[in-house]
Image (cartoon, rainbow, N blue to C red; front, side, top):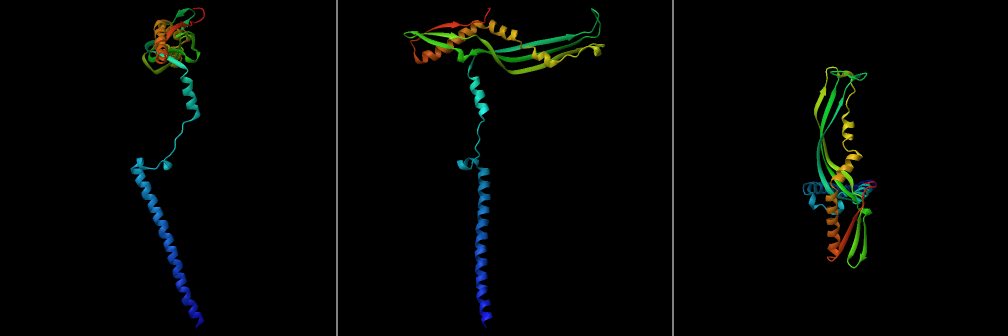
Length: 223
């Protein structure tokens, strides 16, 4: 009789445990379903996602430093440059040119040249009441944007197999020599000076409308 009573008491206990397990499983299922529904909703409407759930994106230190470096240079002029560079190779026997051995290549190029100066080297000194001396450093070729190169003509003679090949990369590298860069600056010096005056006059007079500026411009040594 006691054994039957123990068995009777154990049945409700087991049933109670199963009910608790069922509640836990149901709660977990609801949580999973809720998370899936929430993810689906935020995928369709990302603008409603709370800030703490959004992915956080940061910039690298290298990018910031490069940006700061570029601000030291003041670009006053942008020149649209277009030209054609050519190269021709021929074979010779002693000092005599061998007919039919010529190689020739013509490349058309375009780019935007930037001219200006180093902003960190500008000197502004007050020499009197509302009077300032502004010294501008040497103008220079700062850089270029939007380069495009296109081979427009290539010629190879019937006997050119023994003639040295023409390297397009070498041709492109010879477009912007130090001499060429300086020629861009020298041919636009008057306009660069006017742009520099206007640039700093707008800055200083924005603070002191009665200011008078006296400009001096450094020139390359030997010029």
